[in-house]
Image (cartoon, rainbow, N blue to C red; front, side, top):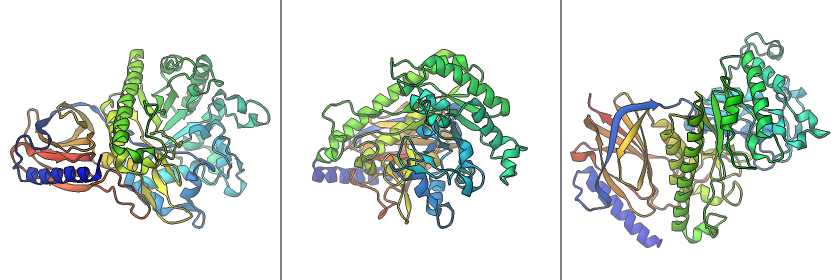
Length: 520
């Protein structure tokens, strides 16, 4: 798309928006003129208090992540990271990932000087255990998030840890149960011997990580048997905890593990997990790799929307599989991000070109919120990976949100407690709706690369009396974030003036949170 043409179209959109605010838009001006967003105000289901998750994992030499997040001079978490994360406001932060295959939790508790170091088998380098259970829970408390812990699930059956001399990295059901007791039992002697009298009260626990992805790891039957053993042992220590089992596809034959896991651990699992990985382009001549997207941003935009469509289908298929079991469990998307080449570090993820993709993913999770209770669109924090929600400047400096983090912050902060249905809307808008009391919230992504969408708002069996729009809408979709301009994607608040139809223009490529007040 020629940049001069894009600027011209942007100017038209801004002009239309000005007319809209004055209630003077004429039919035919702007894409979708005269169309209405019609909302059914009747609540459909409760939106989970855990829907917006972040994911913390020591990534060794691959991305400094946890090591970079620690202030070694103050011997505490970096204040800039704490402040940015508190503003991001995640409901949950998860500890684990592939790292859980060889993590032994007892090495990360007790006196810091006595904690052993060990090899980070997946991500390279040495992990020093300065951050363990207590420090992780402390970070969660500082930022107002619930901790979620991923336990060592017999190393996922990975043969590299069953063979000497790595056998000592394998954690069994007894070790996982002991971790529950250490964290939650008010009278746990081991924790108290470390000078920690009050329990951590960790309520969310995941049994293993991506267990079906390793063709040399557990078979589905081995995983089912061991999941049941772990679940029984862990809930015996604290029946109030919520357990997450693994249910995604087998890398060998493509079948979902969820039905067998839910059958084997019937009554013990509260969530079944999948990971939204492999979100990749359809086309063999894709521009979504390296710097190729810069030659044709419009094609990159179209490909990102295709990936969002495919991801929605994948989530729907998993949800239908879980529903078919009849099990009273919810879905936990405990990892998920846009995986482009170069792996985890594609530069497009620092530009607003990817903003609408991220918004569509979070909208998808919320629309499926009758089953999806935990979800994320990013990894959490680090120094290099562009799939992170938060980038940390090293060796010192600031922490700031990547585009995906800005979208998640916007939607998390402006959201209702009850999901609503959108009965009608312009086709180029991707929308998730919710409400709390007399306030309706819309999460709106304009899928068009170069056209604004003019629309109005209406509520069935109700009357609107006003509202506002919190909008991220850079004039140039190639706008990028960096430590030199960390607030470039901060939303701008605009008032919706009362008038016929409550009309609005959503700029091309914009992501918005709309707040509408219903008359009592």
